[in-house]
Length: 119
Image 1 (tube, rainbow, N blue to C red):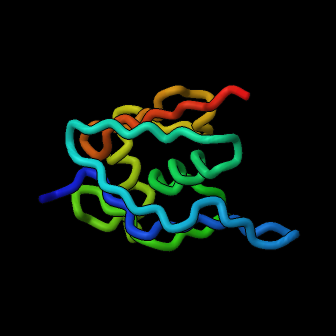
Image 2 (tube, one colour):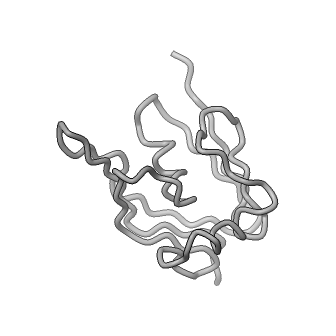
C-alpha cells in the first residue's frame, strides 16, 4: 500500500558554536490518505524541527538523516523547484508557530496540525 507520508528513522540535528543539538531522534511514522496527524508536545521537544524537516525548510546549520517518503518516493534528492510544486497552492511560511494548521497541498500531504501545550 502506498503511504501518503512515511518517515523512517528520522533524526534532525542543529550544529551550533556550542556543539550539536539533537532535536528529533529516530521518528518512524506513516500517514495514509484520509488520516490526520497532530504533533503535540512541550516547548523545545522538536515539533517544529520535525515539521520543517518534512517540508525541507530547515536552516543551513541543520542536518537530517533517515528517510522522508511522499507517496513512496524519497524526496531527499528533489530540487527546491520540485518541492515548491508539492507545496502549492499554499506556500509554506518559515514559521510553524504562527499557524495552528501547517498549510500544505493535499496533493502531497494532509494537513499536519500543530498544537502547543499551555504551561
